[in-house]
Amino acid sequence: MEARLVILGAPGAGKGTQARRLKKKFGWAHISTGDMFRAHLENQTPLGKKIESYMDSGQLVPDELTCEIVAERLQEPDCAKGYILDGFPRSVPQAEALDQILAGREESLDAVLLLDVPDDEIVARLAARRTCPQCGKIYNLTLFPPKNDNVCDKDNTTLERRPDDEEDKIRTRLAVYHETTEPLINYYSDTGLLRRIPATEHDLSVIEDKIEEVLMARDATES
Ligand code: AMP
Image (tube, rainbow, N blue to C red):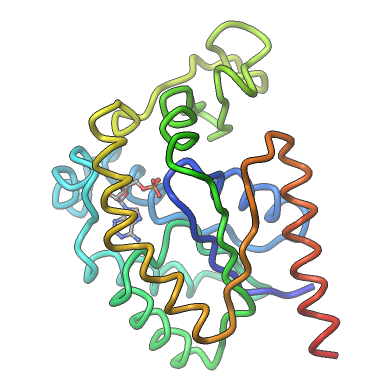
């Protein structure tokens, strides 16, 4: 199955986790602007230096820089059979820029999946989130802890807490989400692309099944 998807949702709603699962299952490229920016920061590239202050404070990186890296990333060969945009777009101007990029590629989105999680749960999840810096696997110390204390099950690397997952940054990121990203819900419901997925369920495969159901229903309507 080919698909071009956007996953929307507050930070910590599970966008990255579900995108990874979909990539594994269907082979679609997983495009996470947050991961791309973190790689630039870590490698101290010229872009990394420009975006450092935004990322550290939990604010959005300017649209121009963000849209440019997405347009470049979409040109890579692994995007030919489909992709999942995770964390992009995050504002109405970014969604408009994406429409332009897609029009230039003669492509369109198949669905926009909104992972719906209430704020209280988001704060608790982010405070307990830990990531493996080696393989990117995401843990939650309460819900999905690693087998051995604070090390990755796959490669034994010490897990890290993202600097922007500290309490005050979490609040900033949630405020940015409500103010700047949430208007995308209307933007995409107006185009008929939005699919709301309740995502408080802790069993990740249940959410994955719901996503697949939504995608299958779309395919059935089209054929
Ligand atoms: P994430 O990993 O998606 O939570 O993103 C981490 C941080 O990267 C955000 O708090 C922003 O500073 C930056 N970022 C990621 N995606 C975008 C985007 N689409 N637009 C602007 N900034 C972004």
